[in-house]
Amino acid sequence: MTARILVMPGDGVGPEICREAVRVLDTLATDHGLDIMLEEALVGGAAIDATGDPLPESSLEAARAADAVLFGAIGGPAWDDQPRDKRPESGLLRLRAELDLFANLRPAILYPQLAHVSALKRDIVAGLDIMIVRELTGGIYFGKPSGMHKNANGKREAFNTMRYDEGEISRIGRAAFDIARARGGRLCSVDKANVLDVSQLWRDVMNELGREYEDIELTHMYVDNAAMQLVRAPKQFDTVVTSNLFGDVLSDAAAMLTGSIGMLPSASMDANGKGLYEPVHGSAPDIAGQDVANPLAVILSVAMMLRYTLKRPDLAKKVENAVGYALDRGLRTRDIMDDEKQIASTQEMGGAIVDMLR
Ligand SMILES: NC(=O)C1=CN([C@@H]2O[C@H](COP(=O)(O)OP(=O)(O)OC[C@H]3O[C@@H](n4cnc5c(N)ncnc54)[C@H](O)[C@@H]3O)[C@@H](O)[C@H]2O)C=CC1
Ligand SMILES: CC(C)CC(=O)C(=O)O
Ligand SMILES: [Mg+2]
Image (cartoon, rainbow, N blue to C red; front, side, top):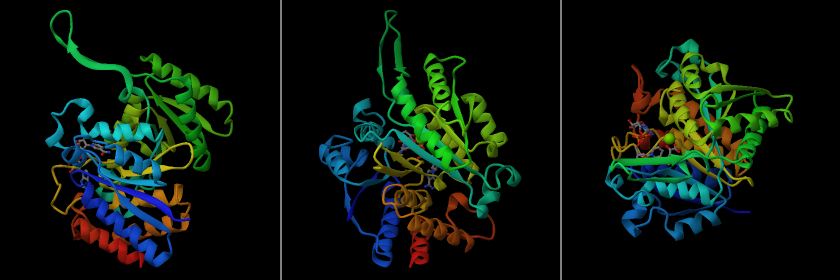
């Protein structure tokens, strides 16, 4: 059956990198028989400019109707002064919540060709393959109450609520245990249980689940130590499970171990295999419109879509291999550039991947 894919390019570098990902999908359709139908919808700042809403009803409906969403990035200084619910970021948060995309998979894999552009020494990162499983529809990004007001002393006061119930924790926990089982069999749960009640509940539920997954080695780590361990000895981690905020921060840090945030893909999954696929990075306003952004994170997100939603692991592997061949050939966007390599624009890198797939 034809799979419906909704492309939501968004803002900044989003449209530039999505264009390359769409070329990859088109090539898979024409040359490898992938049966897909692509549509496009507005989101983020682009949607605010057109409709006043970062997630117009028509875009949400199109996302609901699609089998998978390919998402670029949203946000930028033009919309930073909007009220919170009218900011581009709120559109993405609503989309994640409305589609119930609670499991965010963020693999940090080092391509060996990039070992020396990693922020860390080669021997510390060589062979790195971590899966960060981030809870995506709860925690402090969604907890109520939240807001800003003047308090009784006339001072401005702002607050957010980090809240999880045990059901939310156990469903992400189960997803992470299952992923760990299909990988190296080790799961590290990251929290701040030494300070936060919500983290204590997180830890309790993970321990309870651990009794059902006796073949998985479950460990716990405080988030401050986890940040430190990620840059001290990242290969100690196999699968990591953590809450929305902690996962957001730790995955950006993990990105630099792979050479650039322009290399990190992600999959945001619901309970039925529907997914939204997007790079871990944002809209990169500092380099938008210059044809220099690295499109590999979004192209590798297409590989995740092929594996998790479209159930074409063969084509996923083809895309991942094509990325490897492009790197073998010495092609580098600016963020992963080093001496003696050939600088590639966004379009040249995308074109190289397409050529490899033909
Ligand atoms: N999922 C999303 O749509 C996300 C959106 N954002 C939004 O993006 C905007 C910018 O946020 P920042 O904190 O600057 O994060 P960012 O990830 O957009 O950029 C951080 C740094 O990484 C670089 N970078 C990012 N993607 C790159 C790529 N593909 N190739 C080469 N270099 C790349 C940027 O040039 C910048 O120096 C904000 O409005 C933020 O809210 C941030 C994170 C995620
Ligand atoms: C709502 C987004 C801007 C949060 C974020 O940084 C992310 O999901 O990586
Ligand atoms: Mg982030």
